[in-house]
Image (spheres, rainbow over the protein chains, first blue to last red):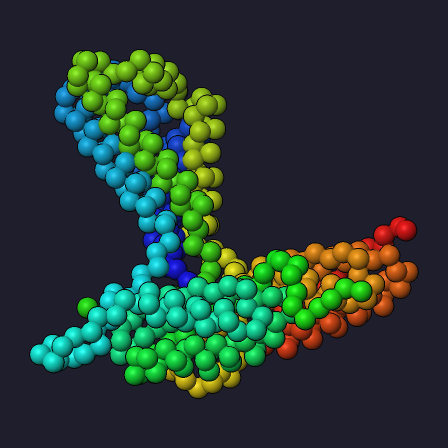
Amino acid sequence: MRHHAGGLNRAWLFVVGLVLLLAGAAGVVVATGQLAPIGRSAGLDLSRPAPDSTIAGQATASAFSSSGIVVLVAVVGVVLALLGLAWLVAQVPRTREAHALRLEDDPQRGLTRLAPGVLTEAVEAQIEALSGVQSASAVLRGDARQPDLTVKVTAGGRTDLRRLLDAIEAGPVSDLGVALDTQVRRLGVQVEVGTGRRRSGEITL
Amino acid sequence: MSATRSPSLRRRPSRTVPASIVAVVLLAVGVLAVVAAVSRLVNGSWPAPVSSAASGVAGLTWGSGAIIAAAAVLAVLGLVLVIASLKPGGHKSASLRSDGAGVVAEREYVISTRALARLAVARADDVDGVDKVSASASGRKVRLDVTTSSEQRDAVRSQVTHAVTEALTGAGITPPPRVSVAVRTREI
């Protein structure tokens, strides 16, 4: 029903994962003393850092006392924090519902603006009135000429799903097309099955 | 500007959990770096926890066990994230086939795997001899665990398998999932 940040997540997970993997692998190579042999086989002199040398010397300590490095640390921190925050915000699923539909092309003759919520409420009410339906929610995307309707319908466990899907298309969706004077371009229906033990048309003796 | 179209309802996992964890870690590291740097600029020295941790790490040699362990953990973590990003993961729903009423240009009908399991449970619960039933489902497979007080375990298994398969096929699930049933006898 909603837009998720799947592509963004996979792309950034790959980038972060690759950076960590390369950093970890480099650390293991240096720590186990394999850096110099690998360098020799590649024709390079990679004798430093050696496994018995310390992680940071006096030069590193003095570098971190200069104001330039401190400002750099602050800037890198701000960038990392903003990236993390933006990535976190992107995890919230978005409906991306259509904006108000304009039902007249020529503004000189008047313009009717129709909130998509008015249409989806009518569609939901019609679907919920169908036999075997426990609840329904709908999202309208696209525009008035090419409406794109997505419906989530929760049915009972004994509902005839094929008949229900046909009834949704022939009733509420067809009516939506009539209301907008066009054919619904795309219909998506996600079926859920309710957990409730309430069953219509059944008695226990 | 083109209008927003609906995403496919039959989607793969969007890796929200690992992405959220990494995002929180990035945010925390960034905030700590800013706080430490601002503290250094204002007070003239790095905060005590930062300087003591930095001097502790700086004193270690590259070949020390702690560094090897940290590097290995980093590499494994990176590998896990790379695999999570590349592995597509299973679908969370199955397609439903329907001829429709012909009033839409394009249609996509799906049933979630959770709904698939509930549908199977509802149908199995109607079979005589079934005392208790639970189910789990993926897009291609439905597994039911049935408890019965009947001694005819094979008959119950056969009836449940037939009833559930017929119900799922009748619902138009495409391709029809494979149904497997495990029957346990309850002592009376």
